[in-house]
Image 1: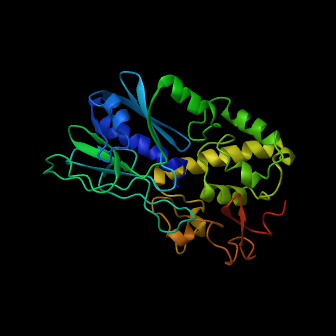
Image 2: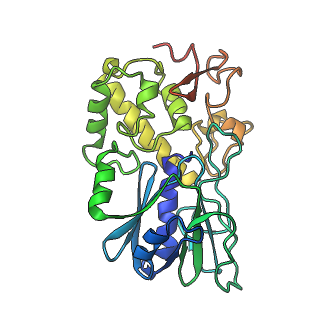
Image 3: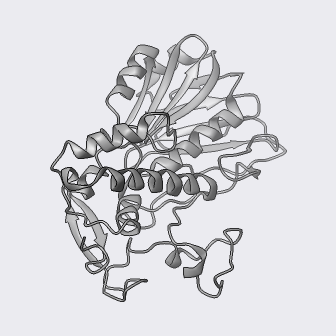
Amino acid sequence: MPEGHSVHRLARQFGDVFAGEKLTVASPQGRFAPGAALLDGHVMTSATAHGKHLFLEFEHGLLLHVHLGLYGAWNFGGDASFRGASSIGAPRKVGERELYDDDGGAAEPADVVAAASSAYAGPPEPVGAVRVRLVGRHGWADLRGATTCEAITEAEAASVLARLGPDPLRNRPGDRDAFTAAVAAKRTPLAGLLMDQKVIAGVGNVYRAELLFRQRLNPWLPGVELSSAAARRLWDDTAAMMSDGVRDGRIITTPPRYWNGTGAGASRLVLPAPEESHFVYRRHGLDCRDCGTPVALTELGARKLYWCPQCQQA
């Protein structure tokens, strides 16, 4: 499942290529046909993300709400002007691929995109079970396999947001305090709280493991036992790390001094190899980068949890 930074990048992608355009909206598969009819022929005004939820807003007050879940993916394609200026890098053609990590190994990216073409003559025939297709003047976007795909009102969108915790990538005034209070009210282990979208929206399995290591926190420490100062540091590191993910298009939690051959003076202008990108995630059995203790692996809440038994005792 893509983590929150990928969904925020998707929102930027949609804003870059479709905002202000009247879109043709269809459901080649047929499952979303009633919803597509409500959106077809209307102007998309904005695209936003909160946690792992994407909202495309249209000028007549309806929104397309998408949660990709485990198997959802978007495909984009179009002419040479159909670009995402900020979401897939700055600037890059919509033809470039973004990868993300999760327990499933080499999964399809959240936003697999088809190459832009100067000879664009409209979208190709749909391939596979395309739940919804959006078509503008210069390109198209297809959605497959999403857990949620629905046309909703602004009030219904507000109801979805009300069920979610604060999003570190939005980081609005009061969000850090809301997170701190939510953690302090629960005896649930921190490793469970970070995956609870009602406590904090957008964190997935990779960020969960890496955040707890970076903050040297025991995954089983009950939230109620975490100090307010430590909770605030955890929130701030989450916001910083996920912002890096939006920028890089990858989850990179190790600083350059941990990258092979880069040296202490290296910058993030050159990104690390995938095996150098994380402290503990998918490194079970390997030596901890800091203390040399083998990284441990267990399951918590039906998800794999990676941690260093030495560095994360406290």
